[in-house]
Length: 354
Image (cartoon, rainbow, N blue to C red; front, side, top):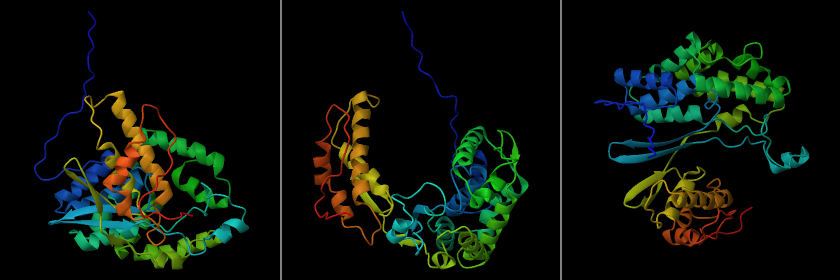
């Protein structure tokens, strides 16, 4: 008789009375926990974690990125969209003059205004409890005094370095290699790595509530570097940016309210996919049929997302129509037994999309 032993997780359950922090990196989780122990709230901890990840997991996070947040505070749900816009000098005319048929992967052309820092500051001003410097102190500490590179981060760091050595050619990329490599080599697992310039940057951000990054010394440095290397981003682009509080969007999925950030965020895609699969019933949670239907639902949702979701100022389709249960049922009918290449549907109020 053949016996099949189900593999069991060796991870142990953890109970906590006062707070819990979960991230992809232990040092970042510890930073969030330390903030809670100091009397900080969940927002303080979340910002501390986000800042820490730009240090201890730079392969996936950076202050050049954006920030979206759903915050439950008191009895209300708040949405924050802190995603940066394109520089004012970026235009189709610029693309055409430079022979660009699509946005390139590397260089200054794809660079938008970083929104992450503004998002941290805005959330902290509204909901934070500890000082902004206290909240960013763990990240500053790890960057200045060194941190141990984890196995997973080391793997992706090395992979990124190999890709960048092949594709990043030009003086504008030298700072990246000076910052993130030693003699052209990515750090090994277990190695202690220092990001002292990043520590200084984070400290400047903390002491000025992010103003230096958008209107002060750091903004001047970004502007100068961009001009030196034919970049498009300017101090005026940084100074004009503001994080925005938005009304979250939602659907009801089998009795549960699911919330997301509205466009230009891509959260509507997840809500559309849930709407599409809601009508299907599966006996086995791990069945091939269930996986197939979920994948096809995501493909249909992403097709609509690519076609219709854009900046709110130019979006020609109402989110309500994309999230309509009637429309989702129409999309669900397209799912058959075979995998298909999916294209966008026609929501009620959609117009021509350019």
